[in-house]
Image 1: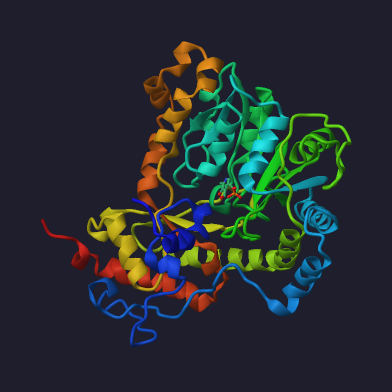
Image 2: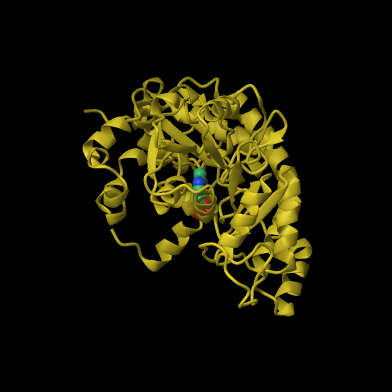
Length: 459
Ligand SMILES: Cc1ncc(COP(=O)(O)O)c(C=O)c1O
């Protein structure tokens, strides 16, 4: 169904989540009601006409603080130097230092950070790239953009991450790379993934687009593989609007990425310089100076916000895991910090008198707790068939590999199918609230749990 322009714009600020958004979530606040705060499991459910448990607004996103953020931005705008120059380089240096990488290159978005990385590791038509089934299309589209074939690895439902135990069965002589995704801002099991990759001589490009500042054994994600890619899209924990970055310790790779992002011109070339000689096939992915100025303002707050998200997530998790039928994420033992781009849990209808997840989501939204159901399975959507029909695929792959039904069968991911049915997400901005805000989330779930029978439609 075509969207109205207004609806399109509203949805667009959250597109990175790639999920179905409810009107409440889009509004950023809970529905208005005469009473401000009616707690207690005994109150009538908001979905059935009662007062919402919460009517206070949630912290909004992105955050813009004119006192601290506008000076630099205005300087850039007034300077007239808007194309890539010193402020972009400063942002890159700061981001590299923040995550502990030798080098950083900023680009127009996370999708193109992945495309550039794949291209500069020479991944092309005829190759296969392993991706987790539970992710955003922004992980898979770059694989298709290079002409390579995505191969989906099933997930662990309790961690929401790529299941390392299932990787080796998917490796073929064509496999060139793995893209582990630190999905929802929770780190993937990099220790096991790296061991498998090294054993099979595979490139590892971390999709850390949702995982700013997340750590495994005190090392930031994005620096554990051969390269790491970040997104600074509007919904992300470091928001610029549309922007992304590649980090790596591999100088030769980063030099090539730089060239690629500036038409293939030599490393270090700046905008406006022509006739210098183009070295490699490239494109144009440069960040603007004012985007970098926004990024620097956001970066100043990121560490503190990440700490707060971790504290609130731990508190909320401990509260809601006591509610029957609510199974929050599990972090691997080696995780020393998560990013919590989203706070996920799995919902079990059996513990809620059979109440379907969609009804639970509606009921929780109605109580003033914005929430959404997350991803649909990416391993069986029509875009894959579109790739299989393409001239590129037909030229690059032998006939037996172009049997789409067989591809779907080989890429069947049953755990992911189930996860997509049971996931519930809360967005990162909610974790910037107070302990009382976390209590509201737990109380609203408890309220629905206590009265689920009233919501179940009797047949
Ligand atoms: C897991 C994941 N990969 C890739 C991307 C692509 O990033 P961008 O939206 O900046 O292109 C995103 C974000 O939207 C993402 O969440």
